[in-house]
Each structure stands twice: as C-alpha cells, then as structure tokens.
Length: 493
Image (tube, rainbow, N blue to C red; front, top):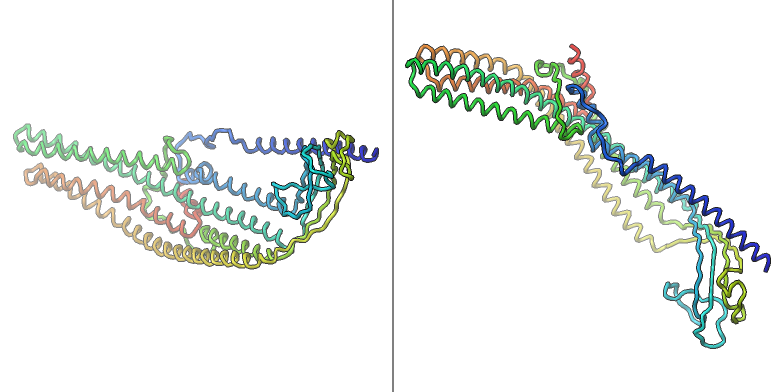
C-alpha cells in the first residue's frame, strides 16, 4: 500500500513538473511568434516618395510595396512552416494525459457490446444484487503512441509539403514578373499621357492665336461674323480635348500608383529620355528559353506537386506499426470482491498502479480499392496539369511571335510618324496663310490644326509604343533585366 501511495505521489509530482515546463515552453513560443507576426500592427508603406520616380524606381517599388508581392512572401513563409508542421505530424509520437473521476452505479451482466460513448467500460465484479447505490471510480494515466515505421509514407507526405513550397516559390517568381511588367507598363502609359497633354496644350495655344486673329479680321469687317463663331467653336473643342488629356493623365497616374502599391497617392515621374528616343537598341538579343519562364516553372511545379500526391498513394497500402507505452492509476469504491470500500476516499483517488507496453500493427487491407480509386483521380489531375503546362508553352510561343511583330510594327510606325507630323504642320501653315490672304476658310484651317494635333499625339504614342513593344518582348522572355538596364543606361546620358 505504501509503495502504491509513494508511486502515486511521485507520478503526480512528475506530471505537474512536466505540465509546468510544457506550459512555459508553449507560452514562450507563442510570445516569440506573436512578436514576429503582429496581426494587430497596421499595414504601412515601406517607401516614402520624396522625388519623381523613374521607370526603374517604379518597378523596384512595386516589388517592395505591392500587396500581391507581400501576400506571396507570406505564403512562402507559410509553406516553409507547413514543412516543419508536416515533419512534426509524421514523426512526433502522440501522447495523452487524462484524469477521470466518476460517480455511478455498478450493476453488471454478462454481455458483449462494441465500444461506445453511451456504454462506458464496466470492469471488475459487480454487486451481488441489483442496486442503484452509487460508488466513486477514478483513473489517472498517460500513454505515448509512436508509429515511426510506415515504409516511406512519412517521407512521401513530407515531400508533398516540400513540393507545395516549390510551387509557392514558383508562383512568387511569376507574380514578381507580372507585377514588375504592370508597373513598367503603367509608367509608359503615364509618359504617353504626359506627351499627349503637351500636344493638347500646344493645340489650344495655336487655336487661341488663330481665334484672336479671326476676331481681329472680323472686327475690321475683313471677314464675316460666322468665321468668328467657327473659330470660337474650334477653340472650345481644343479646350475640351485638353480637359480630356488631363483626365487621362490623372487616371494613368492613379493606375501607376496602384500598380506600385501606393494606391491613392499622388506621385510624379521622371520619364528621362524615353519620350525622345523612338528607336532604342533591341534588348532581347538571344532566343528565349520558354521552359525557364516563370509561368512555365510555376506550371511544372504544380505537376510535381500532383506527382508527389500520387507517390503518397503508392505508399499508403502498407501496415502501420504502433509502439505504445503508458502508466496509469485506477481507483474504485468497490474492492475485487464487489464490496464497497472506504480506502483512498472510497475510489475518489486512484490507487492501483499499472504500466503497459505494446506493439500494434494496423493494416486496413480493404483500403486497397479506395486507395487505387483515389490514386486514379490524382493521376487524372496530373494529366490535366500537363495539358495546362502545354497550354502555357504554346501561349508563350504565340505571345513571342506577337511581340516580335509588335516590335517591328512599332519601330516602323515611330520612324514614319515624323513625316506625318511634318506634313501636317506644313499643311497647317499653308491653310493659315491661305486664310489670311482670303483664299481659305476657317473650316480648312481647323481641319489642318486638328490633323496636326492628332498627328502629334500619335507620334507620342508611337515613340512610347516602341518601348511598350520591347517591354512585351521582355515579359514573354521572362526577364525584364535587359529592358530595365537599357532604360537605366539612357537615364544617365
């Protein structure tokens, strides 16, 4: 009896110490993680704008501030943490600590029942007669269940987590390319809008000058009054175009701010020499390797993840060996003869110690059909992902063909636009001269001015269009560095 009491006290003291250590460790880990990941901390922009942004600065800022980038970075950390979680799940033994104190009657009958929460275990001898008198029963113990042997299933599941990390990292690379391309394209849109705004302002100034000249001639009775009205209408139309150009510029700046993670912020840009150079050197000198494109790598990573899941099913139809060990104490208000006892609080405190060590093999052999069916489903998913990868490769090749055609057309268009602008400017000068000597009309001058304004705007779009075509080519090749390096080199000239 004294040995049992000593073992019981020793067991309680050990459990309390273990629980205290575990509680301290868990609290320390939680505190550390909360200090690293502060969920209550407000989101703040990492970069403050103090000067006009170049194209390269916009791209760099987008890769720092844009929420999708930050989201992907968090997902990568989650995938890394998931690998550690999977290793813990696969190799950490299961352990349980339990205490029960029950007050119940103890009538028994010879029977056989499957395990159920409704019918608790009723061990030991019962009363000699049916009685609803209650007795105390108690139990306290712990058990450790470890299943290290599974013929490769643990490793296969961990490999799935590693494949998911690779898939997330590949998706992150694809997101970076997409975000950087959008930022660069947004910058070029702002440059186009700025150039078109300049053309609209010049158009208003020309029409304003012409309008004053017409009014002077009308006031001198050298032209009919209708000419003044027509000139006023054309000036108003030019001002409407100026208002629309300002609106397009504001929208382009708003879109650029959003694309670099500064949505709602007012920013200025430094276009450098982009608006002046219409025939830059072709940046993509080497043929693309589409298999190394971030989209292709992301598609291949999805296939690898699906194949890793298939490999899990290949390892599932094996027995699992459980190694168990435990220590427990039991207490009852009845003795082995089925009579009530007052020892140890009448069963309130557990008193009888026991230990157990076991090896259990589980082999659900009929799972073969379920596993085979599930594996077949995953194989079809692999086939689907391979076709998706095939579609990515074809799409990249098609986009490369389009980008080459776009570059060629953009260069030719940019080279031809100065000719169109010069001709339109010459036509405007001649139309004004003819009007001044009385051989032309206001409508002819207005038509020539509108053609000049349109040609100047088209020339601005054509010059930037070459850069857009080069950006599209760089995006299809999966590498913006040559394009950004050329832009940076031009900014230093």
